[in-house]
Image (cartoon, rainbow, N blue to C red; front, top):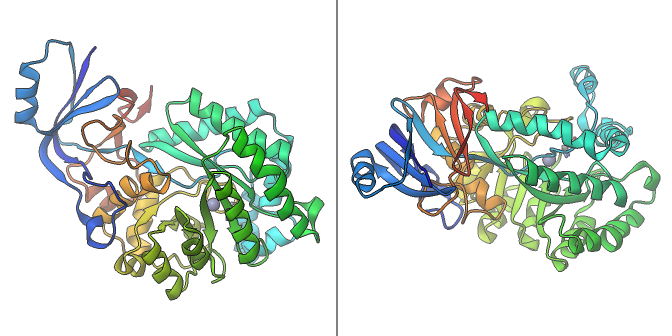
Length: 422
Ligand SMILES: O=C(O)CC1=NCN=C1
Ligand SMILES: [Zn+2]
């Protein structure tokens, strides 16, 4: 068994010690090792520390050693995207001009476009077509240093096509180097066939879809678009409680368009995360802090919708653990560049370079309940690692909107080298 020796990085950003999601000032403690090295064996991290100590460790090793020179580079945990709508058919580039001409996202949806347009194209797509299109997106994620993504259903909006989306996500997890963690989001919008009969659709989600998704073990989480004009707080509460009863951990799209009580509901149901939160109330933020709900913030979505972003500083100061995500989807955030999301988190939400790294590693890992396996460089964790062509972590936010990824290891295997996918 070969040992991989990631040798003498300018900085190893361990983000160690994250058995719980990081809050407030904890978000700034990156556990940096200057002139550090990482040793990998059998897909796991077996050593992390100063290079002099790594060399002592290697004196007792008789296996072949594969050296990756990290001189002048930083090493971070593999980046984690805890909120994507990865699996979908079609595209919505025409919506951009509509919104540039003044149309609002939610009005496009109410008029039968938006999510409902993607639902038409996703229903028409075969599993093979969805796998092919989603694989291209996962390849881009990998080139941006993302080694784990969450993927939601929610463009089927009927039993057959919701199951189809979730089966595609499961196959991607099996076939692609990037780990894919699935979320059922049958309550993403009310499909046209239920227009005017919303409560009947909510019943269908609760009584028909959730039991089968749970029985076939197609998802770990259940999510709902709790928003004015989509699902009410009361409907969202019933859907998430039903998901919990079947073992699907709750997540919620909350307070994206208006302040609607989504953050408060997240605290009430004990959601793992509340996501978006552009319009979260002070009361909602306070209740999230008290109940330990992770805020998954999506500054790329705010940027693309030309809206004010979430109040990240208020949330961090209130003690809410913050994670970041691309919200990869065809309508409100068509990007895989989690590094650019980190730039936006600094430049539009005034998070610091240290906080955004925590938000894209250990806190993002906890937002998908994987904080014990990924999200930091610690002995025993998965060898999901990224070498960035940067002398220190601040450079990642200073050189904005460029891809500084040099090498990516997934489960200890080099999958990107010199910025190029293997
Ligand atoms: O518009 C989309 O396809 C994704 C989305 N769902 C809720 N907000 C954005
Ligand atoms: Zn979303």
